[in-house]
Amino acid sequence: MLTIGVLALQGAVQEHLDCLHSLPGVTGIPVKKAADLNGIAGLILPGGESTAIGKLLQEFQLAPLLIAKIRAGLPVWGTCAGMILLAKTIVDQPNCHLGLMDITVQRNAYGSQLNSFTTNVLIPAVSSAPLPLVFIRAPYVAKAGPNVKVLATVADKIVAVEQGNMLATAFHPELTGNLEFHKYFVAKAGKQKLTFS
Ligand code: GLN
Image 1 (cartoon, rainbow, N blue to C red):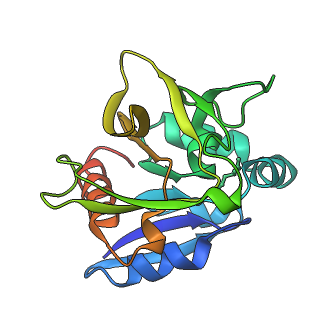
Image 2: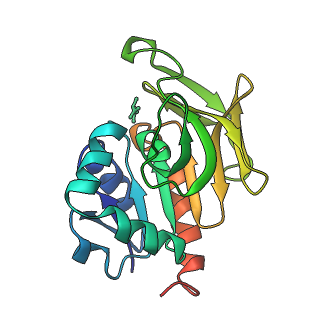
C-alpha cells in the first residue's frame, strides 16, 4: 500500500483524497502537522489560496520541514495554488513560499473566478487520450528554467511542469473525475520510493 499525503491546511483537500482512494493499492492521508509527513511516499499540495496556505505553513512551522523533505527527494505535486507554493519566483511579489522549483509563476493569470474554464488537452507524458483541464483563478508558468520539463501548454502558456521529484499543474485534475494525473503522480512516487527514505 502506497500512502500519499495531501497538505490539509486549506483548499481542495478532500477532492484529492477521494481520487487517491479510488486508486487500487493507494491510500491518502491529510497532512496537518509534522508527524503526518512520516511514512508518506509522496505529497500533494492542493489548490486553494496560496497566500493563506503559505501563511499557515509558516504559522504551523511546516515550511522548513517540507523544504527539507522535498529537497531530500520526497515526490511532490502542486496543483494551482500548490504550483505557486513550489515556485521560486512569483510575478509582482517580493517573496516566494517554498521556493523549490525553477519556475516564475503569474498568479490569477486568466482573470477572476468568473473566467474559470475547462479545456481538453493531449499530454502525452501522462495519457494517450486528451485530458480535461479545469482552470480556476489559475496561474501559468511565465518562465521555466532549463532543468524544468514542460509537460503541457495551453494557448502557448506553460501549465504543467516537472523538475526531478516535483510536479506542478496550473489546473485541477481532482475536480474532473479523470484519474490519469493522480495515476501519473502515484507511479512517480512509487518509483522514487525505492530511493527516498
Ligand atoms: N488564485 C489562487 C492563488 O493565487 C490559486 C487558485 C486555485 O488554486 N484554484 O493562490
